[in-house]
Length: 164
Image (cartoon, rainbow, N blue to C red; front, side, top):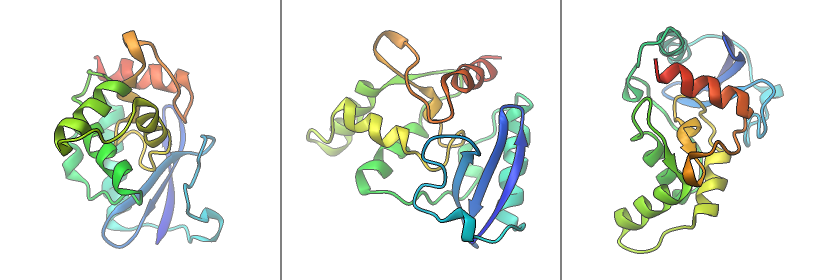
């Protein structure tokens, strides 16, 4: 595993990858930084995956809308959380979904009640690959902005960037 930093318009990001996939992307000052990884023990460096991620972020922050499937992503999470992250990747640029809509989508996908809006919120809040797996596109009932591990101001800025 290797990590590197990326200077974004919204603050420094930490990128973490193994030899084949991106494992993490966090603001350096966010909640749940590093997830289960001991970042202090992981070597800094560069790799094709980290370079591809930086190029994706360059395109994103310049207002283009790069496809999520351009990157190999491997978030480490429970099966439920992985399902939530998959649904997040289907939310188009400039659109939002509520926690309840995601819970309803999971129920439809699985053919039975899979989780509550609160459980979805827990998964979204612990998303290890921020921005690319677009947890910032999840809003509360009636569209109000609610929790974001990187802070609500960053969430507002990301949503504004995507509406351009």
